Image 1 (cartoon, chains in turn orange, red):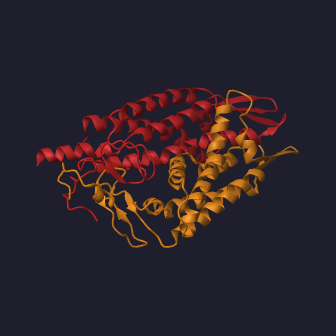
Image 2 (cartoon, rainbow over the protein chains, first blue to last red):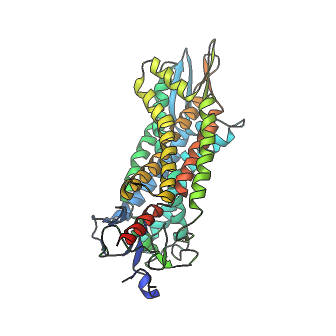
Image 3 (cartoon, each protein chain N blue to C red):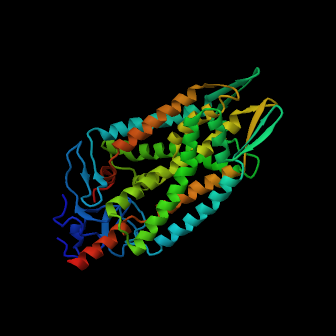
Amino acid sequence: MADGTGIIADADIEGLIACPECDALYRAADVAPGSRATCARCHSVLISPRRHAGMAIIALAMTAVVLVAGSLWFPFLRIEARGLWQEATLWEVATSFIGGPLLLVSLAVTAAIVVLPLARAMLILYTLVPIVFDRPPRPLAARAFRLAEEMRPWSMAEIFAIGCAVSLVKIADLAQVSLGPAFWMFAGLVVVTVAQDQIVCRWSVWHSISPN
Amino acid sequence: MALDQPELTHVTARDAGLVACRRCTRVWPMGTERCGRCGSRLVSRDPRSISRVWAWWAAGLMAYLPANLYPMLETRTLFTTQNSTIVGGALELLSHGSAGIALVILVASVGIPIAKFICIAFLAMSVRRGSRMSPELRMRLYEIVEYIGRWSMIDVFVVAILASLVQLNVVASIAPGPASLAFALSVIFTMLSAQAFDPRMIWDGIDAEARQRA
């Protein structure tokens, strides 16, 4: 097919894919649902379709929206010491640095635990809902999905859940601490995020946005 | 679906005169500027990629020093005010008997960042000078660095949680220290450094070597 120097005719390019990690060139094939095609050289997963994945991803994205939005208003930790008590909601955490040079940290924390997870879930819904229900993809679907992919490393809701657990122990000797409902929402979000990363086959999504 | 190629000398998109989209894996004729499917910018190999890696790497290292020297938390209890740095806070936890959490904090905010600096530097140097470490292993290393980098943010989140939660007037209150900003920046810069690295370069050298031998 390629002799190392040859240029491939335009018509042939359409079925080709290149491993994003090592640039090895392949001809995309039909992969049976449930199995996966990996790069023979660097073992990155290239194609891993699943049956009903679209519906599952939509359900998970909607769950994520509900969990993040809900966790904004419920307290996730409550402390008591000598008759005084205090509850923290996510909103207070996100804005805890406001009023000083540490405002930047506040913005970064808000983005990482609220804005980006929420935006990602909505972009995924925007991209996938029409496709899964057999409608033509939205005009901006490709841009939306690319944005969602670019946000992925910066969306840190699941790391925040671990942070809650660490804080819990850190102040255990300073005051009495108890977990609020939002903590469990975040714990749920961890599961949702991990499940979504396992199910999404990026090649299938791109292929369904535009087969060529 | 693999091409019939010996194990290491795969035909790459570049060999075939094509440029690959790293976002959606579609290939285009060499010279195409943007992916027609997803709109990502296309670069077959960016010669400046390594310089960008080093620039973010240096910025991350510079932010990491103050992150360890300045206090992360200022804890005020009835009679005392206490400033604790990252390591100081972990040692304090250790002395209170929570060795597990002290370990989590030490690993997440000292071990992982330092290991990341070393790994990224090693990967960037190995692209220029070659390495005896196999590309598979270096690839694995890169994947681990990319995956694990975000988890260093734990400490910043803990500071944010504590600062908003512990506001019990005179009994106890916690305020964030300047190190929280430095640490957050350090994590962000090293993540950008890892993202600037193009893993395809790990494999380019191998192809050239294998061809020379053949």
